[in-house]
Image (cartoon, rainbow, N blue to C red; front, side, top):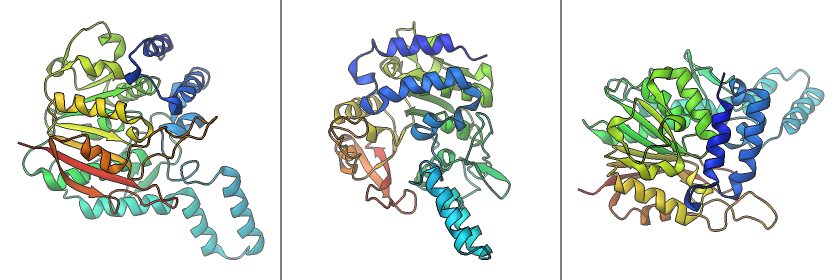
Length: 351
């Protein structure tokens, strides 16, 4: 049984943490709703619960596609009513609305970009069904969610530039439900280590998920580490999920620093602090997925959006000790219909 008392305890601790490590308006209200859903519906179903699906469990279809379930039904019913015998059109519409077309496009990029003879192995990954996922797709006998595919595309971009060096110690800020740790476990890299730093309740979910897919003995979390004043990277197990403010207790070096999508939800001074931590830990590589044009500004009275968007160029400016290696909206990112394009940024520490 998940220790929901630990969830309540880490949430309470978060509200006493420095402002840099507390959720912004975008996340604050959602966090309380997620806690309630986890406790009432069960963490075992978190990948099919409404609020996680809207915030940290991305899908190719509803709700991330831009269509609501009602709109999908209306479009399906309309085509069926007007053209009941257009079977190919029905199949095409179903594939489009479910997100299968977009998922297959991502998979084609992965297949074309990856070299299966080199580490880290990406071609062996198949996602678990822990958390009762919806919107999971299968290609050539392997399972993927949009979350895992996002990371696979990012790792494929990184892999192009690695040469013989491998990023064995990976630090991620805002790791969602721990997908990158699951991917590293299938990578074939010896001696890999994954550290996920995040705010609760997502950190709680990631810890639970990784315990299921990696084994209890290979994962540590806030309950086991919160009393420590220092957390040497070398002392942590294969996977560690820490509360956001614990990043300041980390000591040592990391090979790769990752953030996918969550920096765009933060204000610039918060992002700048996390990137300063990456520099302090001497991360050799920085891999980011972000909105090139930044998150839309918040409208008064609404929780979505930010006060000051962080633009794609801002990340490069915030990392003066790093060289931009590659910037990609296509093929590794995603060109959106609303003009807020999702791009990948790969930077390397200057020697």
